[in-house]
Length: 63
Image (cartoon, rainbow, N blue to C red):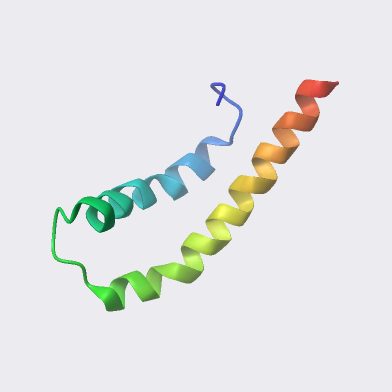
């Protein structure tokens, strides 16, 4: 992804998801399933916004 393609706020909002992914995939720490379940709605909304931002960026690049 090009620098500046996504709003800075969106990147900051999604950054914790990369850490959670590492915990889940690599078992860096014990997983609190209640916290994961509580974070799910926020993560889903954030990724919807991410997909929309990527789509908008691709449209801008075509013009």
